[in-house]
Structures are given as structure tokens and as C-alpha cells.
Amino acid sequence: MNKKITIAIDGYSSTGKSTIAKQLAHQLGYVYVDSGAMYRAMTLFSMQHGYISSNHFDVVSLINNLENAHLEFIYNHSLGFGEMYLNKVNVEKTIRTLEVSNFVSKVSATPEVRKKLVTIQKEMGKNKAVVMDGRDIGTVVFTDAELKIFMTSTAETRAQRRFDELIQKGEQVSYKDVFTNVVERDSLDTTRKDSPLVKADDAIEIDNSHLTKEKQFEIILKLVEEKLRDV
Image (cartoon, rainbow, N blue to C red; front, side):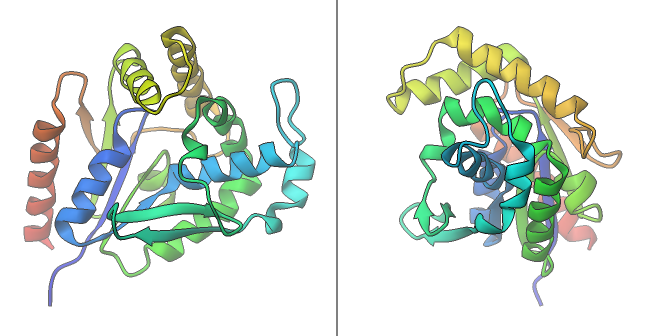
């Protein structure tokens, strides 16, 4: 019987958590779950229904209508991973916009939202053989994960990566706005009362400020292989 482990990847925004998680899942034949996409989908749901905007956040209405937000990942064979669907609509591209990014930390800080999504996430990982990335995977969702990675990088590096990504997608954004968003999200993610972003005691920190994607994958895959030998 093939050994299976749970891999939890946490870290700051725009550190490439999803990229490395997808790579590992593909390499190992594991299920990949982008928990951030789930929070982004909940943010989009809030925006669509007018619960959140630049000048208000109707938390009560969001909480009262959580049951109307149906999230699911549907596997795209051409891409090699599951895309995020909100109420049967593919929102994979829409949830990656800077507009959604500007509100996601506020929506994510809502305890009732976190409770709903953590329950779903735990169910997804009950059979192991899963790679999940996010903010609280190693500290809340999979506290007993065999391998926990905590990714970090300078705010300037992360903002530049995010800016380049958005420009490539055709979005009209400025580096200044992206940098501001990165810094604000860091503050909100690390100071929220419910499941703040922190490094788990048993997580291995990876600072990829000066690492290529290839070198990063090599380092983390080696950690995975070592864990697989130990279980």
C-alpha cells in the first residue's frame, strides 16, 4: 500500500503557495485544494449581493445567507487541477482580481465564514493524500498534518510578482495599489481574532524571496520524500 500524507502549506499572500501546492499534488498524484479560492469565492458572493463594498460591510446579512453560497471544485483535465465554482458558475478567473483581493481578508475574518469553510476543508482531507494551501491549514484545518510548510517573502517581492501576474492577465492596475493591498492583507491576516496567520510550531519556513520556482520545488519535494520515508 502506498504511503499517504497530508501536506499543509501556509504563508503570506502572493508567496506562491498555490503554485507549489499544484506542483506537489501533480507530482504525487494527490488532491490539491486551494483554500484561498474558497475564501475568495465567499468574497465574490458578498460583493454580488451587496454585503461588502469600499464603504460598508454588512456582516449580519452575509452570515444570514451563508447557506445560499454553494462552493465546489470541479476538476479541469486540461489544467490539471480543480477550478472554483460558486453556485454552479466557474469563478476561477473572477476571484483573482484585485477588487476581490481588496475585500477577501475582511470576509475571511468573519468567524461564521471560517467555520463553514474549515468544516468543508477538513472533510476534503479526511483520507490524506491531499495538498492544501492557505492561512490556517497547519494551525487549524490539519493540525496533525505530517508536513507543514510556512512560506514567506518580502512584501516588495510579493507585490511585484502579483503585479506582473495581474498585468499579464490584462488588468489595469498600478504597482503602488498592489503593494498597498499586500501590506494591508498582511496586517489583516496576522491580527484577526479568529485563526490569525501564524507559523505552526512544527512548520518548516521557506523564504522564497530569492528562490526560483524550480529550486523551491526541489527543496520542498525533498522534504516530502523525507516525510514519506518516515511514515
